[in-house]
Image (cartoon, rainbow, N blue to C red; front, side):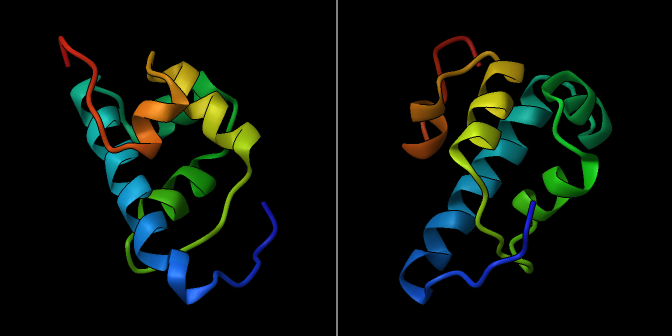
Length: 86
């Protein structure tokens, strides 16, 4: 995942998405390492996405891989919604 600057207007949104991913990961009882293994995304990338102190843009492909690993739709992550039963 290449480091690229994030426009200020998207900073809060990316933080929110990262926190949603972290919450869903924890609800699924997964460590960052386990989510990385399940999604095929590196643990370092998962950590960067989840960290509110280090805002990183990431690809739609990465979002889809993480969503699939968490058994949710990418839209659930983007809309900060938790599917029923979670």
